[in-house]
Amino acid sequence: MKLLRVGPKGSEKPAIIARDGSIRDLSGVVADIGGATLLPEGLAKIAATDIDLLPKLDASERIGPCVANVGKFICIGLNYADHAAETGAPIPAEPIIFMKATSAIIGPNDDVIIPKNAIKPDWEVELAIVIGKEARYVEEADAFDHVAGYCVCNDVSERHFQTERGGTWDKGKGADTFGPIGPWLVTKDEVADPQNLSMWLEVDGHRYQNGSTKTMIFGVAKVVSYVSQFMSLQPGDVITTGTPPGVGMGIKPEPVWLKPGNVMHLGIEGLGEQKQNVKAYSA
Image (cartoon, rainbow, N blue to C red; front, side, top):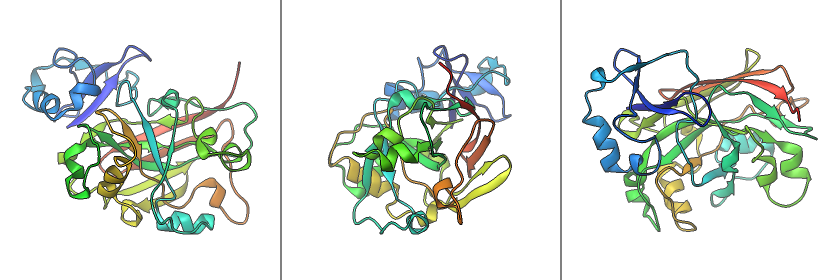
């Protein structure tokens, strides 16, 4: 299933993509796409619904974040061997965990705002895991039992804040609008192999990232198991899993940074596409 949320910010309706490509209203079936809806029984309820009988929604309406009320927005850093190489960083011995603020979450096509005092804003196309069942000290062999599905994430970053202002990476990752997710939450039954998905990102029509989840250092099962050793995971938590090469900071001979007026366009095989206009901060 391809689940999404449609409507103005703060008033999104749960929805699903029908077989004919139309968007159907799920608000008579579930309250929202998040929390209990993502439990196995919640997804089973949607799967048992005759989607063709549901009302159609206007395809021109805004698409919101594909998960509502995200509890934790967790990130795995330097998780692609080829991306680590382009940054000159060693291959991590264990997954690097950091957090993005949940207030960074926006819809897949909402504007990305460059924060005040930013110097080095950057892009990162990433596969995101959406948790569907509580996970605590989960074995890697059982990790997929706790996954509801996947979505596209743009892990927008400010490298100056991230690496040159001291402390952890979080301050360069959590600005408002730095976490577009969607357009859809694609349930795991539709993704045969999350470690074999092509992914790409363009800025103003120039393709900078052209990679695959094949080059992940730590795969989806390992990531879910590993994170669950340090914190419990609840339905609706989102884990982004790292980015392939081609980020702005890795461009040679000089890095390329986002600026107002840019348009980012990105996607992952089978999970849909995003497009964001980049704008300057305005009080």
